[in-house]
Image (tube, rainbow, N blue to C red; front, side, top):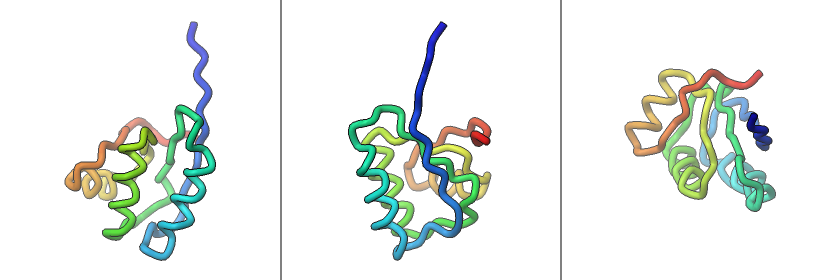
Length: 89
């Protein structure tokens, strides 16, 4: 049997340019933790700066999940892989 421990950060609200720095700082605090997960179930909209930040975070090993269908489609169209598993509650 496998035990997996992850660090989950749940985002709520619009991920826009003026929030990107906060998101990257918070994720940076967990830079050395494998299994960092961003739950975007509370994010209805992501602007261009947010998409670019999520692309960088994903490239650094962060798992992005819990997106609405619309946000997931936007991110995937921009080359950001999204885990479409249900959001962690």
